Length: 82
Image (cartoon, rainbow, N blue to C red; front, side, top):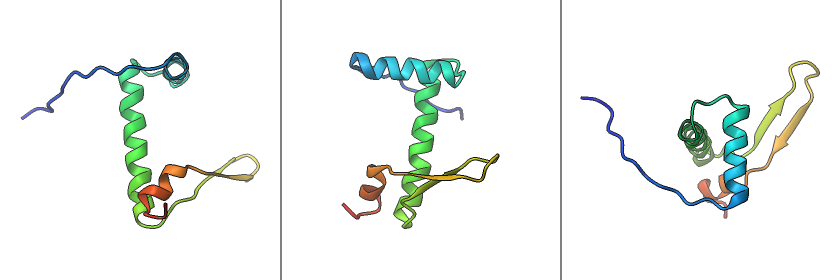
């Protein structure tokens, strides 16, 4: 049994479409759909962690070990904090 797929259409404002096109290009995705699919996978992974109480996203520069915390307000909603 193969993976089922369904064609859907989205309406984007100009800014959102430009952002998606830029992300697709910079990420070297084969298509806009590939970029959206991976974005969904990332959001799903982060939401699952947020439900377990992990709501802070920390990124580190391997060269300097400098860290930054990225605040994603939606994670607080997934965690039930908002």
